[in-house]
Length: 234
Ligand code: ADP
Ligand code: ADP
Image 1 (cartoon, rainbow, N blue to C red):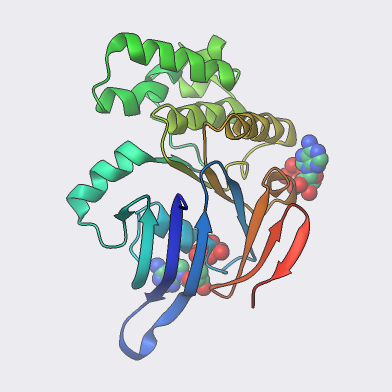
Image 2: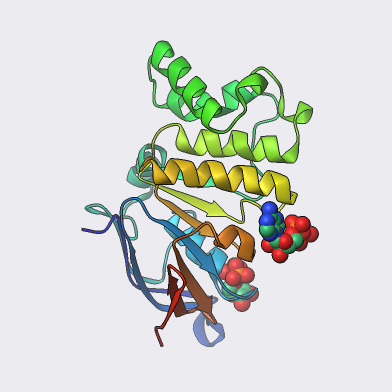
């Protein structure tokens, strides 16, 4: 049974005769333990798709199952809980809280979930070690580099062991050394079966860390590459 099942998802923007179909008939599955890339030209619908999967936006029609739950049909109250308990996010611009330390930023999801302080402390130290930021825990975001900020954001996304992580251009603002560090840490967690990741990227180097890449073009799934083999989907 797949972890994520996307079925006939459509997204139309606008009203009446002015509607524009940003996504048309998108269907695919992601299994537990996958690291899937999503690529495609600017305007193809990548952000629209990711925002829908991340429950930030809703599809015009279609179903999105994560385990037994259909997030396309869930009411906002239930969705807020689901998002907090089961989903992780990494954005291009980090989205850290400037008034909190690295440690406080990372532990936020566990604090909100009211975990015990001892559990929180252990988990923060474990995830910070994975991302190589153990020595930065008491610093504030303005005191660290972009790469370190993104590793802080990734630690926060992963700390509650979400079912799936949605990453939107996570290396978009990073230099190549920082991008490599981030991608290697994400891959390591993925290979240890601790994270299922879906990453939108326009960067072929970032995509090379994914075992499967979905290509979107004009709102449709146009192609899929699996371990270097090309398969046409149209
Ligand atoms: P990508 O992330 O691949 O660059 P987007 O998902 O941002 O693509 O956009 C897909 C298409 O939908 C584009 O043509 C874009 O102009 C359009 N679009 C995105 N957001 C909106 C919106 N809020 N209202 C109307 N059109 C939109
Ligand atoms: P920019 O971000 O300005 O395009 P980069 O130096 O990040 O420049 O990347 C230049 C090119 O090299 C890009 O195509 C990128 O995908 C690729 N690249 C970046 N980092 C590495 C790396 N560590 N090893 C191999 N290729 C890389």
